[in-house]
Image (tube, rainbow over all chains, first blue to last red; front, side, top):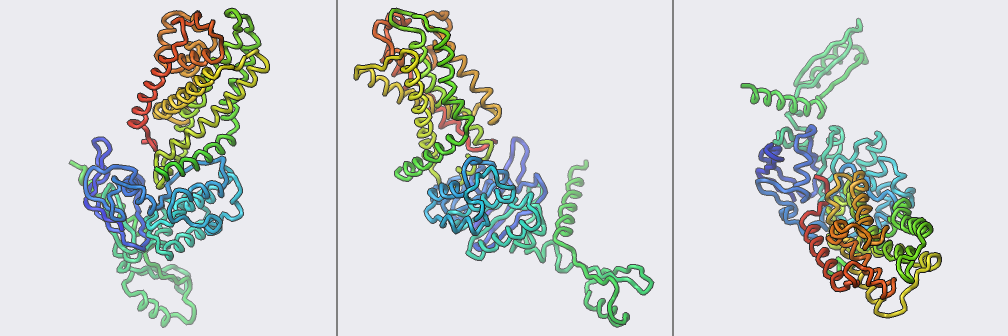
Length: 287
Length: 261
C-alpha cells in the first residue's frame, strides 16, 4: 500500500528526515508516533503529495506522490489538522459539494449519519464544536470511499466520550477495508486503534511493531503489588506474575488487600524509547 | 476538460453561495461603490465639458473600478484568507482539477461584478443623469471591455494572492493599491487635469484604460477631445488589457500556492 525507502528531507541546511524506511500493508491501521518536530507531519505530507522529498523512494498505491494524478487522489482521503474553512456553509451543503469531486462518492445522508452529525446537518459550520468539526473533516476525507485514509492527529481537543465514539467510527472504516495511516499524540488511541505502530524521533524510525510488543513490552517485567496484614505496601517486579499471585493466594486467607498486577503501558514504553533516543543524541553532540 | 468544467460550475455555485452569506464582503464590494457614487455625485455636479456632468464622468469611472474591485481586490484578499483557513490545502488533496477552482472563482467574479455594474447603472441613470448608450457599437465595446477587464482583473488578483503574508494582512496590502490606482487613473478626478507624471504612471496599469473605455461607452463623442490622447484609443485599451492578462496568467501559474509554507 505504502512503501518508503531511505526517505530524506531537509529544510534549508537542516536535515529533518535521515532515511526513513517503512511499509504499510493493505487493510491495517498504522499509527505513527513521535514527539513534536520528530518528522511525523513532514513524512505524512510527503506521502500525501503536499511536499517534495530530497531523497529516497516513495510509493503510495503504486504511485510516486510527487507525480500525483487526479485518479490517484480519487483513491485517497486526507484529514488535515486545524482546518477552519467553509464557515458560512452548512454541513450538508459542504459534504454534498465534495461529492462532485469523486467517482465513488458515498451517499450524503448516510455519511452524515455515520459520522454522528445527523442533527447538525443543516447548521452552519461556524456553529460546530471542535469535535463536530473534526467529524466533518473525517466525513470530507472519506466521502470518496478512499482505499487509503490519512488521519493527522484527529482527536486533539476531544472529550473522552467523543474520543471513544470517534474510535468506533475509525474501526468501522477499517472493517470496510480502508487502510489508515494515523498520527497521534495519544498513546491510548494508538493502542485502541492501531494494528501496528511506528515510533519516529529526530527524523529516524526507532521501531515498528504491534502495540502489544513494542519495545519488548510483552517480555517486560510485571509489577505485582499488595498490602500485608499491617497495611504496608509491597511491590515485586517479576517475569512470572501468575506464580507470584499464586504464592500470595496461598499466604492470604481470602482477598489479597490492594492486589494489582501491572504491565508497562504503551505510554511508558514509548517514553522510555524517546528518552533513550534523547540521551544518545546528547552523546552524539558532546565533543 | 469536461470534468473540469462540470466541477468548475459546481464550484462557481458554491462560491456564489459563500459570497452571498459573507455579508461584510457583499457590502464592501457591492454597496461601497454605490455609496461613493452618491457622495461624489451629490457633491460635484458641475459640468466638466459641454453636456457632460462630473457625476456622469464619475459613473463611468466607478464601473471601471467595479471590475478592479470584484476581480483584483476581491480575489487578492479572499484567496489568502482561504489559504489561512486550510481551504486551499484541503482542495489540493482532492481530485478536484485545479482549473475547476479558477473557473469557480471566475464565475463568482462575474456574478459580483454584474451585480455591481447593474446597481451603478441603475443609480447613475435614476439619480445622476447617466445616459445609457443607444448605439450598438457602444454596447459592443461595453461587452468586450467588461469581459477583458474582468478576466484581467481576476487573473491579476489570483497572481497577487501570494503577496500578502496572511489573510488578515491581505486587506491592508491590497486596498491601498486599489485606492491609489483609482486616484491616479482619474476615477475621482478628471484624468486630463491630473499632473503628467501621475497620468504616465497610471497608464502602466489596467484601471486607467478601463475608465477610458467606459467613458467611450457612456460619454458623448465630443468628450473624446478632452482625453489626453484626443481620442478614446479603443485599440490600445484592448492591447494593454490583453498584455496584462498574459503577464498575470504567467505570474499566477508560476507562483500560485495552495498552502502556506
